[in-house]
Length: 329
Image 1 (cartoon, helix red, strand yellow):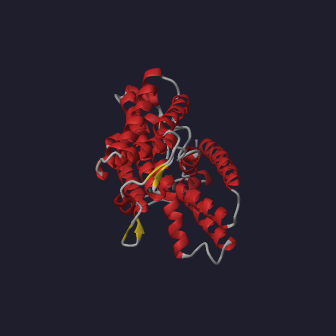
Image 2 (cartoon, one colour; image 1 turned 90 degrees about the vertical axis):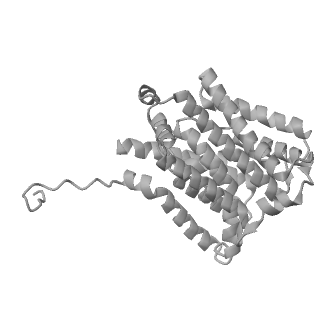
Image 3 (cartoon, rainbow, N blue to C red; image 1 turned 180 degrees about the vertical axis):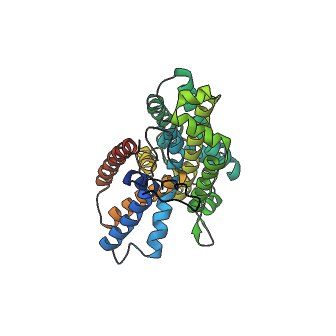
């Protein structure tokens, strides 16, 4: 018998809450909580200490920045495999400008943020011009940008720039490492962009159905360009943070980071098929990657095993996304 209100009309049925829906809403946070519990058991004396948790957040800051950028490219059913190379080239150009005597703030703005945005714009322009899948374009530009980095640096690290740069960008404010603050500010801005702006709504629409978005009056090429500029800018900011933390611009910086960033986005609930995902989930995904790397380091697990774990997580996350999406439909 259907329940009814005082007027005798049947009440609307409660929304269905199957496992697929619950997983899409709370799965990422549940994974993080479970992981924290397991890590606490594996390293009860060290993992949950304040210093180690701050270190986890600090190590995750670069990954969160990269993941927030690549999130937008995945949101339109694309990808950006060049973010690691963009990180390296942006950091290298910034360091070269500082070594040439340019004021720190201007070198950061032009060499870090500006170069990242420019390289992202090149990716977007090539995708629009060739109409090839972003996988092909960014696979090519990743090699090009890395090669340019090696040429500019003569395959050597650049260090010895103004101490004020590292003191500020890699310093602390009220006891909180500034890289963490930068990651939170960037993630907060991008969250606002996706939640409260027309641009954000259009990007979701483009990822959900590009053809329908086109017929709705959304400029596919313009939004594709914007998405890749966002990804490049985030990678450029990550290059600034990485250079400051290591006090050197390394020509091989960011190698393999695209794998971790993509894993962060996918584990964070972003659909590899476009149109679904949240910045908050991506941040949690970045923290999951940071926690995994941290506990593996604590347990003295070799670095190459971490690569195996990341690859397995990507496959598992995409498989789960496909299965749960099919069930929800």
